[in-house]
Amino acid sequence: MQRRSFVRNMCLGGLATFAMPVISFAQVPRRGRFVFVLLRGGFDGLAAIVPYGDPAYRSLRQGFAFDESELVTLNGTFGLAPGLAPLRELWDANELAVLHAMAIPYRTRSHFDGQAVLETGIDKPVGASEGWLNRLLQAMDGKRSGIAIAAGMPRSMTGTFEVQTWSPAQLGAVDDAYLERLATLYRTDKALSGRFEAAVQQQDLVGEEPMARGNGRRGGITPLMQAAARILRQENGANVAAVEFSGWDTHANQGLAGGALDRLLGQLAEGILAFRKDMGDAWANTTVVVMTEFGRTARPNGTRGTDHGTAGAGFVIGPTVGKSTIVADWPGLSDAALFERRDLKPTLDTRAVLKSVIAGAFDVTGAQVNRVFPGAEGLAPVSLLTR
Image (cartoon, rainbow, N blue to C red; front, side, top):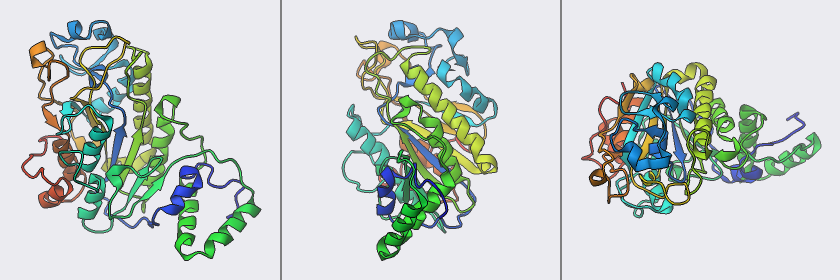
């Protein structure tokens, strides 16, 4: 280990990586790689995938309504917010499915409950200790591996299947002598020696470019997505990954084009395209899903923001999409059409989307998919989502 800096961006300051079980990424079938991106806080789907063609849109959103000229229009009803304009490249390449009027199956405006339902994959916030991504790894055949790229183990990855975790932290330089003494210390401990070596190898793989600083508002989305690409594109790399970003709870000063939310959406778009580029040839069998725990209120609040809502938007991205499309049974934005006369009405279940995606990304049976989402056996996957 002849380096002058050690784990500069190691998981949780270099400690959490050692505490997690050691997984040597196995040779996995190259049928697919899957990345679940969770935007914590509930982003405003009506400000991201803008229903500019809905007759009630402009009067409902009032001062929060985009001009059509500001949008990247996808059809006569929907357009991408200015910050998401780079995703037009994916749309033109038939690699973008836009999801709208989508929600978890449990009605809540609590971040805690909403994230619990989305990450466990069941229909209520209690009753499951395992995350749906961990159950996916359990249900899949053959050799497979997973990694959580987050500042801790996301609930979606929690379970009996052992996964690794990686997260950046600025630790500064450590000289070679200290590194060697630390290595000697860990070699004497049977439980930790493998973890130490795995952490070092993981850092070698990711590299030492400047990484994320704090939440997504500080520009950390692109570096983290690039780190994810370095891990997943390896022949022996994980084929299931969870990535998360916070900062999407826009109660005040949400803004329009160039505003706070739009800038954050711009970071998301930039990060996704950087991930696509850095995946190289491995992109051909990669699928990315972007979801959030709930949408926002249809009407703006008194502080130039939006409050916790119900249905929102998301994305499925990758060559497995087959043809760019908008997946939405659009309920409309008239007062009578709103859920509780307040929120966009949900017409698309997150589990139906995820069932379709994992069936398209991996060689799994319907029975295996149902093990991932217990209680949703009668819920049909979204048709025509993946090829």
